[in-house]
Length: 340
Ligand SMILES: NC(=O)c1ccc[n+]([C@@H]2O[C@H](COP(=O)([O-])OP(=O)(O)OC[C@H]3O[C@@H](n4cnc5c(N)ncnc54)[C@H](O)[C@@H]3O)[C@@H](O)[C@H]2O)c1
Image (tube, rainbow, N blue to C red; front, side, top):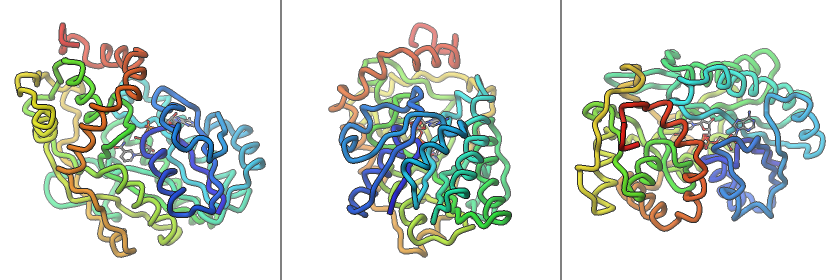
């Protein structure tokens, strides 16, 4: 297997590479990544000497073509994306470029070079919000943000490239993911690193929004199962039935760190109510391939909090670099005030 993984200098992609190197020790692995704000060489430090690295953008057709010529992948897995929903409220265009155009460029190269398998990583957010019941792979797409709409565009290209050109592409739709090496900007690492720096954490309203959480190691093994055992042309939800409200998540983190609930600062939703209230998925189709998550939410969250407590050498330089602080200042504005 010659496995090309895009976006593996980021959170989930780096765990997928670790999983691949153990599951298929004979595989040749390459990473293609633009090293944007959330993609860092430090995230790949433990496997960098075992992979080839191509530095560039997935929407750059000549760079992608040169990388395919040089590496000749049999398997292509696409994690590269603008991945932060809140950031899409400030720069929707950049999300469309990477998450739609980039996918199309990658699929064209995969088609030209006759890849045996292409796996595209999508999200449960393409389905929108659900108040009762659970999304299946057949649920309609009702994305509510520029991020989820752009992801839905890339996701729909999977079906189109399979139907139109026979590209052997599989798509996975994963739930909210947490774990080590998470850029300190999304909810769990953002809250964790702020608390470890003695700062308050902003919670929208009563914190009643509910998300389905999955540990990054389980998400990575789910994608591996879909790639190796799934059917081309099919979509697979990757979920763990672990629904928790944002308030429950932050309370568990405060408990693990031995901190007081007074560190929660309730603020109005900066998206003016545009926050999806609940995500929930049925992952039975992937489980039928023999995959099952192995890490309970309580155990996984506690271990993640301890990882961040012990690994300031990884997140400290990223936190202090200032680009996230600049984003938070723009996004939260006055609502965090002196607590920013
Ligand atoms: N984090 C989650 O909770 C979650 C849940 C479901 C699905 N997903 C999807 O999983 C994938 C990975 O998410 P993540 O949380 O690891 O994101 P991340 O932001 O940590 O990593 C994204 C990586 O892609 C790279 N990248 C960005 N734009 C690029 C471009 N134009 N060309 C090449 N590389 C580029 C970045 O440098 C980074 O290394 C995304 O497609 C995301 O939509 C994430």
